[in-house]
Length: 357
Ligand SMILES: Nc1ncnc2c1ncn2[C@@H]1O[C@H](COP(=O)(O)OP(=O)(O)O)[C@@H](O)[C@H]1O
Ligand SMILES: [Mg+2]
Picture 1 (cartoon, helix red, strand yellow):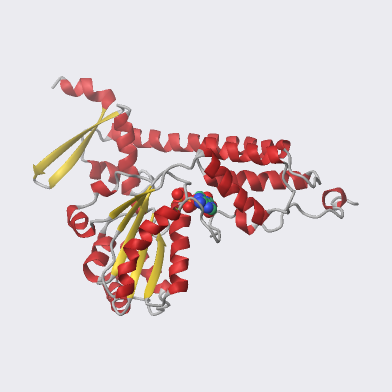
Picture 2 (cartoon, rainbow, N blue to C red; picture 1 turned 120 degrees about the vertical axis):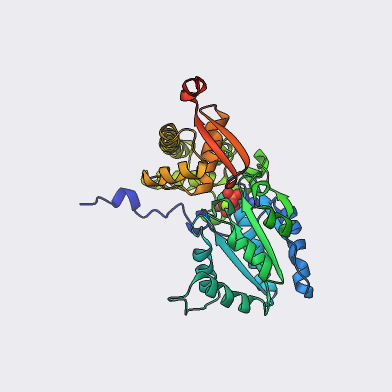
């Protein structure tokens, strides 16, 4: 039938290798982040001379290279020495002490985890790690449901650097005092890339992923400008891939602006859908507050879960804070009650009625 003939024909692909366009690919170099990597490395260095390391708090908006810079550093460390165990954990995927402890067992090749409780497993890990030194990275640390793991690591692992990564600058300030006082972390900030830097990062990835001359210069510039406008390298990688696919669909050996525009329109479709989904979640939380107005935040969270909400507590708190910023709800902190400090949330639509009492 020749259905595939004009698509594939004798024509080579524009792609040399798809892998460098993957979001979790770790490139040989992470340009523009050398300074941050040096800062973090300086905190790890004492571990090489049998001293304790310093802890690090990494923050910055999404898509600016926090994860890739730290992973790259761990890789280098692993090549350098066997004395330091590198542990990378994504807390979005593993958000409780138990899940993280299991993950660490797995990373350490400890297999006999069946029927063991969190405390037992932690003791096993501790005994292994205390024979060496460890760098433990908790990426997206704001997704942690509780802070027990951080506390236990700080208390019981003697030679370590804890690296906490988050998009939220304020997250660390809200940590429990018993953790903050033990953490005393060095703060490393990642800010947005400039336009030139965005072009630089993407052109490196382009060189690995595509054949030379696959890209029209103005097509690449369009993709990189869009990534800069949206302030996220990830979206740039997405556009490179989609434009490449669009060119292949048309059996074109070169990638032009038209192909990039196909990617851009997909991107817009995608982000509108995401925005609607986000709004739905926030609206849902607002309804739960309305039905439980004046109650403690913890109780409202329980009601939210009972009604099918599945964000973690931290996310829930952040959404409440957003709703409060926009005056949909009021947040009142009460200290020293029967349960210690607590926060009451009130739905603002009903404020007038309440004030009649
Ligand atoms: N300086 C850089 N060099 C190479 N790739 C980068 C750089 N900065 C970001 N990236 C890439 O952009 C994407 C987003 O970066 P990531 O580290 O995941 O961001 P963050 O953790 O800050 O949200 C990843 O695919 C990453 O490989
Ligand atoms: Mg990240």
